[in-house]
Image (cartoon, rainbow, N blue to C red):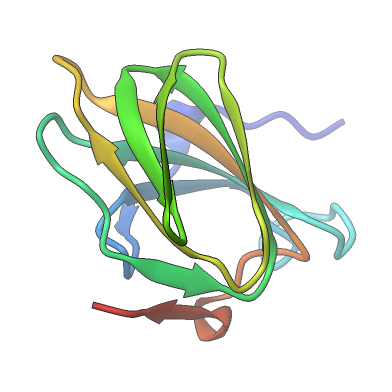
Length: 120
């Protein structure tokens, strides 16, 4: 059994400006090479840089409110919303709420910095 606690994980700043904690990733954990799971935070009033990933991403909003932009489409998102991001899509998320925007990010195949490109 593999159990990890968010509080025990280091926080890193992603290329897009979100604070990330890698919860499960094949480079660190014996989980196979199919996906990765991260916890992300965008602080109140902040937004990520526009970026492109060459992998599938699924965002699951844990708390807060935001505006998700994928290519030319914008949608308001909130707690318990799931967002599917197609590979190669330009994306960003903006925190428009009164608290930190917190969400899980599932990547398949696993997240890799070399598959990420900031486009601003």
